Image (cartoon, rainbow, N blue to C red; front, side, top):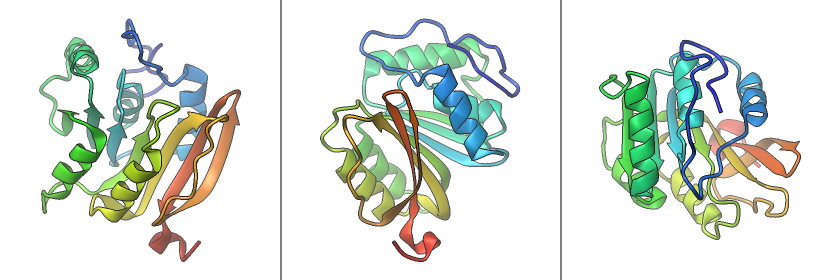
Length: 190
């Protein structure tokens, strides 16, 4: 696995911890092609794993990237990866070790904290709380009105409707499905 484009282009992401399912390079390349310019965006990477999505966004010009990972072991690997890239003390980059809903609550309590333009949510494919996490995110004050939330999942586990959000795009890459959501207020209704 490698960074595909931007200032970190070609950098190897290194070994992947057991139990971590990183977004495939071809899916990531397609995702960022659809997203277009990332310059200046504030990005939240939920269930970060290897951190590949947030690192790709940072490499392409994101101003702020916050990774959330619940596993301390996986988070340590991501910390080492950031240090190896010389990014351990980079302003605008933060790693939160917490369960996703706890992190959403914590970030939402900060009145001057970042409001995110782009969110990646790549939970374990069979995660039963996907909708609850997304509804908590859309009900929080963390999203800009025109935010985009990209959810990675499996074709065999379709994403049900999410209160407060509407689907604006969906792309299939083999068994992987990427679903683009935005706040309903931005889209003018469902």
